[in-house]
Image (cartoon, rainbow, N blue to C red):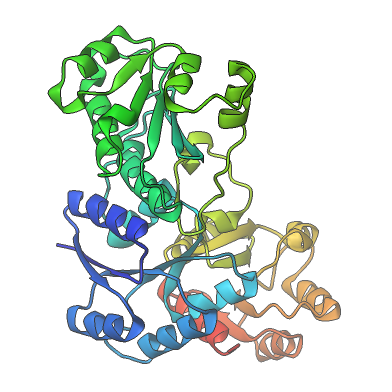
Length: 414
């Protein structure tokens, strides 16, 4: 059985991870505090460490360097999640075995895809299209579910509600569950029960303070006929539901009440949270960092087989790769991204590796460069190194050798 250690995680993050991983037959251990975590890590040697960054970046580096210098722990991969930090700081983490760094709030489907990749496990994931939005106004929590019922998101709901209630110190929260977009039938019964059970899981949420907006006769019959949901009201009119929950004496009309209480949200995004909207909802992402990659590498080679081989190898250590199969493409695209490392061939049609080295030297980019070439002549090696290349590797090499040399080179930047 695979073992994952979770370090310094917030309750939401920790419990949600523990439940999901346990369901997938992964053993989970938990540690709070870096000293306790290091001792447990050495004794158990987990297959993966998931680290929730709560302290300063300097403290994190101190822990990672201690792990890096321990021969037993150095090879344990790490996924870290934390606040937004400088790209240069994130790339430093790769030197200590951090495979992914997710900026909070995390989109958990991407997180679990990364965990499964590292553990070499295929996690079951519900891909039913579903939009789940949660926001708060005063002591009312609005939960809107649209398109469908996704079991992954419904499982997350329990933890999101607990997080909101605790952070906002809500004593008697009232909930409006809006499902007017859903046409439910008996096949949705177990998922609807999961939705209601997770809504009521928090002891501060009483069934009498839960209102469900739905046009589904099946939803009404299930709720009204289920003793566990006694007290929950099913309605089709939002104005009437709001009037039953909110003191409307200060409003001149119901439309003012709806505008003030629903369209103006008081909730601010919680930095330590997990997204209720997932990457898989749209497949669109603004920048590569959101996928957790800690390194961005440019690979320049006219051999397409080598390009794909190196790309797959670097992906295994959490690196995003941009592939260029000639020097002209690289020169055109190099200024569009900030690279942590460049893997460069020498002899290519058009602009050669030497020409690229000269241009990079003139621009004073400071990006470390590894030459990976079939050229073995002493003059070629000397010229490449004199033009700023940090390493010269002769083809062919095993991918793990190239990765190790790359990490050693980046580690030397500290």
